Length: 482
Ligand code: BG6
Image (cartoon, rainbow, N blue to C red; front, top):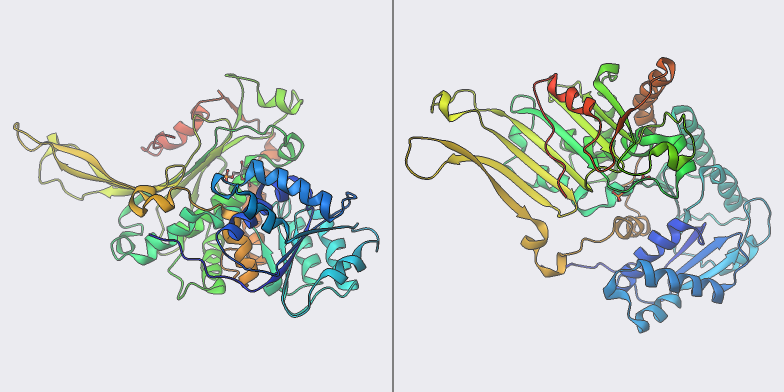
């Protein structure tokens, strides 16, 4: 299967924070890969903008170095690199002064898409938005891109939304949750709404429960200060896992268009019940290596590096079907999987000795992207009707051929969607606020109860209490396998 590239017209992309980690590690390599894939021909301008006193030439050297480290192997061709760098420029400017802004204005071309990527901390969003307006840089074709964390709680998210809304229309604001740019996350919608097979069974009548696991083997090294304030709930659950839950639980949108999809996701978030305290487990890694507390240098830290919870979507489709979500750092493997656990057959014609067997649909998001359906068959051979579960296993890389061995990075898709003006895979302001409205009481509850996370070993599957959370319901987590 050959991937199809639909070229885009020339655009100007300004990356505020262009010298920063995200720009160098993710945004610029993603643009480079799109360039190598033939996404645009000539005339594109990618302008780094930051306080550092670079000029175009020295910034291009910095970019060349990062691309050598972060762009994928097939793009490390010298001619392609030189051609890409030809599109790259730099302006030194400051959100707090007018210096540099007229230089930036002079570089921007009229009558083309103009995107401003705010790859900076949220406290700069307001001042940057203001300068863009006061220097008359916003045109009809202007879009702004903002990164997570989008707020720290509901109030701060509202303030951010209001700040951006004072300068831009919602249609111009692209809030990134990079999970939505992952190929396999988009595939959730294709699997659900592109096949007749699953959707009739996709409800509480046939589904016993759903497990969503985003396990990471990495820790928090290098991000201690941010993580200590965020924890797993704000860093992963409020956004990435919430988005996965939405895509799994939502009603079919009438069409694959930004508002139709986001309206349905919003309905899921709004249908979430508050989470009962005894349905949440927080953990913090300790043992099996340096502890979380040692890493952040705070012997009394109560920030969670793991969280597991049971959520309920109170609507017609899902009443009575729990969703178990868990995520954590320093776990046994990097593995993001959604397991749809179907109910047992209502009656076994094979008698008690055949045991109980339920189908499981596992959607592996990363790594080793693919789908496995556990089905029940007869165990071969003599000895009566004995049943056994076998996997119908499909790896996307194998099924789709060698060109698709390495899925594109989420940022490739997302940055190009900004240029194309497609907001489907970006979060709307009301969606983010609804997610915080569900998250805030959970965090407030921990604070008011003085909750301390349960310790778990690095390299384990998380705290034992997370197993109990399931066991109490007569269920158990599927394994975390690489
Ligand atoms: C980020 C979180 O949003 O997502 C990180 O801040 C986390 O803590 C990362 O490690 C996970 O992303 P991915 O793409 O590696 O699954």
